[in-house]
Image 1 (cartoon, one colour):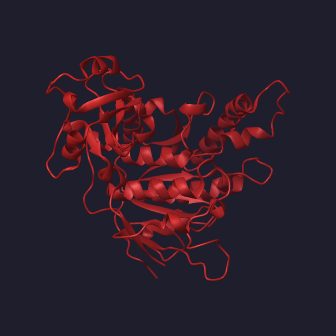
Image 2 (cartoon, rainbow, N blue to C red; image 1 turned 90 degrees about the vertical axis):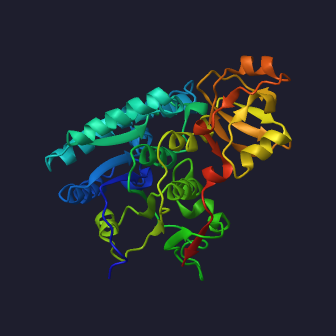
Length: 375
């Protein structure tokens, strides 16, 4: 039985560490080989694939026992350095058996925070795809610490899918998707379809719905919801099922949760800004007049005259948050001035734009439409 196959030109596949590692933390080469085989089946159909793979820290964890003077964060960096080499070597060997050249792309938040770095990464991955190289993307855990870390690779896969204009993102984990409660308990159902509409699924989610990973099921949900609002289909499925990627792309009736992408796709620089919430360098608080103008039906830029205070240090070109005087979040935008300049202009009746409308995304547009689901 098919649920309605559609044509995909380019997809991203995110593989969680709980899919490709064994209980002892070592790489599960057999499972990786099945995923590689599944991706090869898509390649034969001319579908471009970007693989976002976790597993580096887990793969290196059993190789050394850190000394007592090594703190947990530094130990994580060492495990990542060892494990990432093992991970990419396994992928290159297994994809090579099918004649596919795989290349490594390591990213940090800084790669997305700066527009130039963002475009450089996009150009690199585009060139890899144009030359038949399969990009394998992972967070650079050897240097990503504290504020430089993504929530987890679910967040990274969402950024990559948006940046590369993918038709779909498949998030593979160790459960079949999102459930209305604790999986396996009486009355709990798999949420198969999430469409534009009404409702919020977060009340159904629990931290135990997916195993390892820093972000868990909540990050998967937030990533899926945001991408669906941009017109990208998102599937959350069990990566332990053989041929799960091909079955989903073929539209087969397999267990999964699908977030149906909105009919209209978001394009251009606002898509970059939409995903920059966690990259904001600072914030500005605006008065009631500015708040009403920004939230109104008419497109408006944020003018310096509407700013009442500045929090944090930012440079011209940085992404900053906009807050109203009640502390409510309004949106994001690319600043045309640095924070010191803005502070010096507060109270002056200048109509100079701090954030031009073309570089501004308001809160409702970040969150996207509300969602409803079919059990």
